[in-house]
Image (cartoon, rainbow, N blue to C red; front, side, top):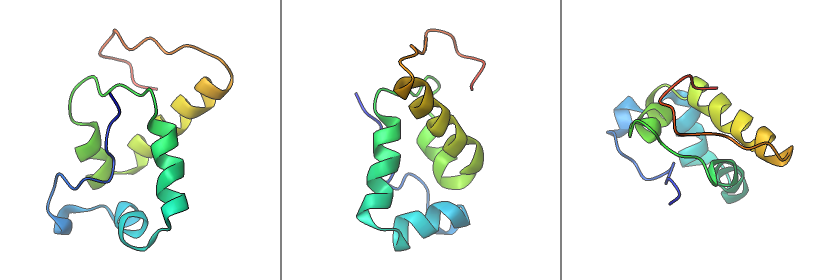
Amino acid sequence: MSIDLFLPVVPRERFHPAFERVFLNGTENDRNVLKGWSDGFIDRDGKFVQEFQTTFDSSFWELYLHAVFKELGMRCDFQWPSPDF
């Protein structure tokens, strides 16, 4: 099951400025890259999308590292609640 990074789960006034730029002013290609990075990512604690939309930075890098490791053929073990990347 994939996560929907761009389905708003918080009011717009709580959006992080970087998320708001991608969500409102980014191109479809911008959003598709981020969606591709999330392919296979498991939201272990059920709050990833909320954090992506409100705090952005750490979630962005977590998605990026997930995509890099996946591209390198590494397997991520999501059975543990932490640490995050």
